[in-house]
Length: 82
Image 1: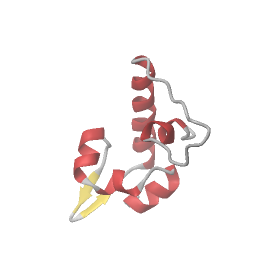
Image 2: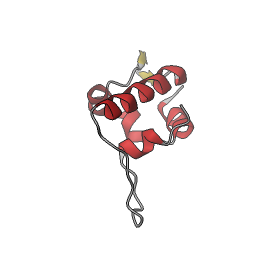
Image 3: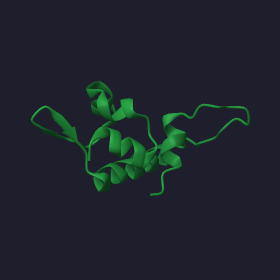
Image 4: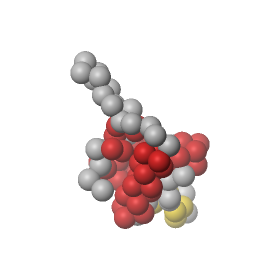
């Protein structure tokens, strides 16, 4: 899938999939096909599950403030249907 499609499917921000530094820092699995970035939905969902499990293992809890209009990456990953 293209970054835009995977962003739409997961509800995560597009920049996470399009910016190389962010992809590498977060360890997002991707493939380069010529000059294009392609992502596998199953691999991305497995990555999200591992990322969320690692945060839980470290004792980091996902909380939201009642008036917040913005989500953190952690909140976005926690809301994925994994």
